[in-house]
Length: 167
Image 1: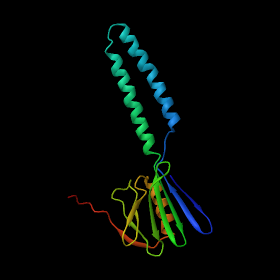
Image 2: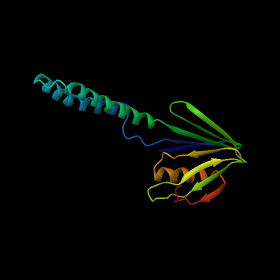
Image 3: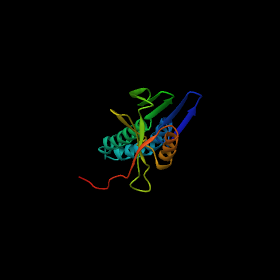
């Protein structure tokens, strides 16, 4: 998901992965799936197959861990702030864990075309010493939207095709 806010002196772009379900919805799903699984496990345990209980518990624990991992990855975001003289890129989950600041005059945008029609273009903001890849977690439509927003603000310094050779 890409959203932008423009004021007189700056453009702020927020890029984050699409989130299909909230953490609350994931917990409801886990609860709804654990009830029948644990009920069946208890019935089998009462019939003498008690060994099923730890496996049912481990199954629900693994599902909960997978849902937690997916939800955590979906909280990642990049905030790109373009002002008249600088470009700031913050990325992290709830608070910025990494920050880059470029001079607007010395920075540029590199666009690498997609290798497959489902992929989006790879975008990179750079200056002479550093480079930051933007939106590599976005789907094609969101990557194209981010590219259009960045092209309106930056000079495209390089446009290339993605290499298909592997080492």
